[in-house]
Length: 219
Image (cartoon, rainbow, N blue to C red):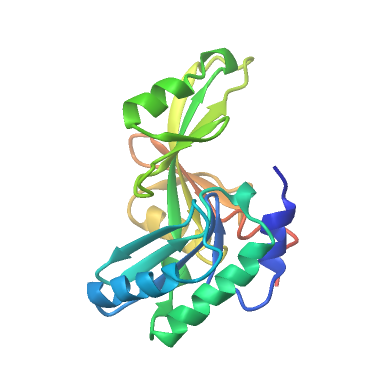
């Protein structure tokens, strides 16, 4: 795995429609109807170079395009591919909406010797993506990521939600969550990420990284 691919994507020109999420380059194009979204999906499907991990999800008001399923799988040829997809979307009158781009991930934490990824893949009907996660083969459900807990800490296991968003959306989303009754547990990593909790103490991490990786999009 390498950071070179997704970093090059962030630096590339003419990619303002796109966000680097934990699941890789993603864009949402707003449409006026399900028919338009389906038509756009058909046109994008004809773009040469789309890979086996590409996911197109049509809804009544949008088409979501995922070029990969993991940011580490982002390669240099995804730059031209994303530019081509955006050109097709513009030609069909669709409007990019970075604020609508997101990915929700379930993070299951356990001590290294207790990580049980085969169980989670089996019970969810998910497919392997890498050694520490699993994905919905339909591209609809959230990714499941196995996070190692520090063996020295007394906590044995835990779960939380990761919400991966655009660099310009993280602070907005965190503020909305607080306004809705949540609280900030820590913002020490802001604007890359915020950890919040609901009134019962359930935690959520809003991650504007890697799209807002420090030193890459400070402009």
